[in-house]
Image (cartoon, rainbow, N blue to C red; front, side, top):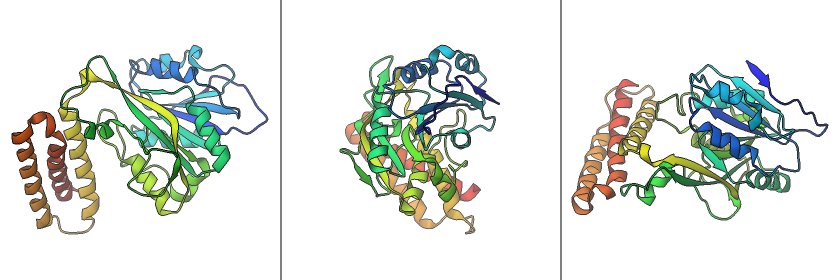
Length: 313
């Protein structure tokens, strides 16, 4: 299913397709749609592609309201029944008409100059991909004491400093704020559908995996520090368990992949790493309290997940 909300045509090719993928976030989506409507428009033509990823809440009705959309900007709404953020992003790729796909999540607030900052870099440097800064915005309460700065990256916080080229696998962009030239996908493939959030399943990794493919194939990735997105976090929904589950699932996936055709029995060194991680986490918890030990506890569950993933594959 595909629905064209606006039919404004331009002779000039579309430079940017803003791709918004959403799943059952009718309670959070309106603010994102409102923020997209308040963007400073770029000089070159752009469009919006919204992928309804099997929504069963009020999202379809929200998207049918044409009052959200910037005047004169072509908007297409499509439904992707295959659940998963990677499936939704791959569908956006099929639907987009722009030279670049620019991805935004359904719980984010872009800075008004978000689009124009990307446009400037695209026209000045013609990069193959671009990434921008992500700030964490806390909603509905105070930040928990146990949420130390070292954990903010797991909520999407990202800042690589001044504008530059990215060429290190250790300095990726994140899925909530990046752009890719559309023709790149035909050369290195789509997003890995085994990775990425699927419904309520707390998982990720599809964005960094794609970034590493870009770097491995010598594509040019530009960091755009003033293309800023705010990731809205509900403080009342924050739980330590979220971070533990995230790392456990990451370990499962990596353990399963690493095993390949090897024996089902995990290597002995994994149990040594697990034991060391447990010892370090317990020591930190005894000395500094539980508000300072979560990051180390995440290492413990990562190794547990890795071993489980290796065995079960």
